[in-house]
Length: 186
Image 1 (tube, rainbow, N blue to C red):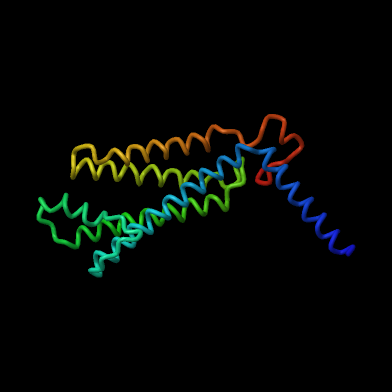
Image 2: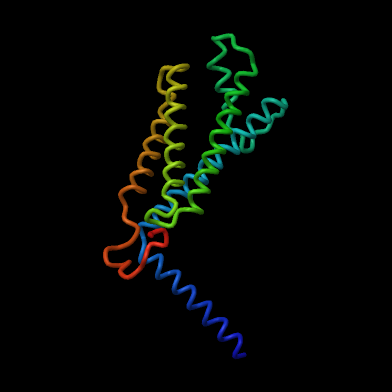
C-alpha cells in the first residue's frame, strides 16, 4: 500500500509540475500548438495528394482521402496539350513538398523549447510553409489567372501569422520565468 501511495503522489507531483510549467509559459504552448497545426495540416494534405497520385497512376477510383487535384490540374492544363504524366508529376511534387513540410514542422516541434532552443528548426518549417503557398499561388496564377488561388492566399496569410506568433509572442508570462535559466543559454 505504501508503495502505491508514493507512486501516486509522485505522479501527481509530476503532473502538477508540468501544469505549472505550462501555466508559466503560455506563449511557448501557443508556439508549440502552431507547430502542431503546421505538421498536422501538411501531413493531411500530403496524404490526400498521395492517395490522389496513387489513384491517378494506378487507375483506381478511390474517393476516401482523395484530394481530386489530379483531375483539377488535368482540366486546367489540357489546353497546353502536355503529356498526361505532367499532371501526375505535379500532384506528386505537391505531395512531396507537403510531406517535407510535415517533416519540418514535426522536427521543429521536437526541437523547439522556447528562447533560442530549436528556433532554427521552427523558422525553417515556417519558411518552407510560406514558400509552398507562394509557389502554389504563382502556379495557379500562371495557369488559371483567376480566383482559384484564393485558398492559397488564405493559407499564405495563415503561414505569415504563424511566423508572427513565433517571432512576437513571449514564451512566458512577465515574471513567470524568474530564476529559470534557458537550457540553450551559455
